[in-house]
Structures are given as C-alpha cells and as structure tokens.
Length: 248
Image (cartoon, rainbow, N blue to C red; front, side, top):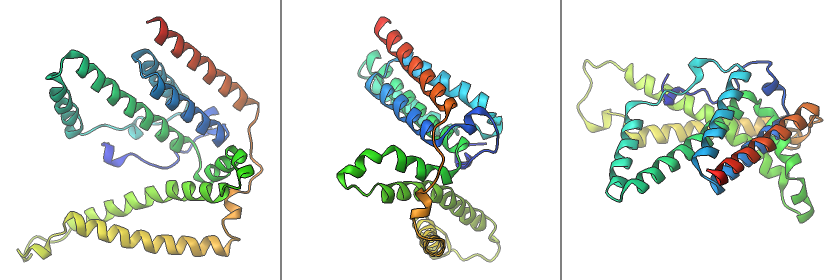
C-alpha cells in the first residue's frame, strides 16, 4: 500500500486507545506537536516516534494500513539533502530533522483519525475550546467546520480515486487524439470540486433535517479515569524528552 491509499477513516477496534476520549487524543497531538516544534531535537523526535509506534501497536493498527512511501517521495528527500549538501553537513542534518518533524506530526494526526470516530471530534473540540465562549467566539461553528472538513477529506480522496480509475478504464481503441479527449489535472480537479459541492449540499440538507449543527456538538461524552492516566503518561514522556534534549 502506498501513501496514496492510506485509509483516512477509523480502523475498527476496541483497544484502550480506541476507548480514550477524543479530546484526550487531540490534547496529546497538540502537546507532542508543540514540544517537537519548540524543541526539535533528535531525542525528542525519536521518543515521540516511539510513542506513536507503541500506540499503533496497542491500538491494533494492521500492517496493511501503514504507509509505504513511493519512490518519488524518497527521491524528493534525496534531492533536498543534495541541495543542502552544498551548505555543509549541518544543513543536511537540519533538513533531515525538519523532514522527520513533519513525518512525526503527520503520523500523530493520522493515528488519531484511525482510532477516533469522526462523530466524536466536534463535541470534543467544542468542550476543549470552552474558555473562548467567554470571549463570544463561535466555538460550536468552528468545531463543526473542523469536524466536517475531517469527514469530507476521505470522501474527496475517494472521489478522485474513482475519477482516476474511470479514466483508466476508458477504451483505448478509437480514442481521439485531440487534447480535449484526455483528462488533465484541471479536469480532474474541476470534476472533484463539482462532486464536493454536490456532497456538501446533500450533507447540509441532512444536517438541517436532523436538527441543525447544534446536535453535532451536543454529547455527554467526556474524560474518564483512563484519560487522566493517559495524560499523566503523556506528561512523563514530555518530561523525559525535554530532559534528554537538554542533557544530550
């Protein structure tokens, strides 16, 4: 499976990671991301990558769901390293560290998507952003917007895959050589946008028929004892990473 076929939806399971509150996972991604951005050292990046690996194992993520980057991905990294080689060894190390940082952040986000139902994201965001309500901020609207974007991204990717598959299944015999007969990037993007607009209209009608966006953020779910334990472990991991970064 290549990076183009990473499943951006929940992987079924009943592991301790799946049972965590969605807000706990979002806090974990934010804290780990902030720590690695502020302190992007090799010890912190390695420790966070190890935490992601252990979390994936506990969650029971199948090996087939793990991304396998295509050749051009490694080629781009090699080209970037070659460009930075002209500035010295330190520039290469800095480039590789920035690449590792990006991969760790993407991996943590995908791990949350794999272990969290999309229906729980909007209520969790609404509860986490409750201090902004005192500033009269549209917290519920922001939470709904983020949740719908996360929900719509897999649909858009599936639509593009379908367009590519249909284009490849077109018969080659008797095909016109005129440029308009070929589907270019702009044609594919236009078709995907048209489908996305149609899906958004249908989704808005369904949300309105079910009581509006308020029902998307209304929930009784919240943190439990296991979430407190997970946050304590997260704090210990951050403390160890900061200590290793300072000492080494």
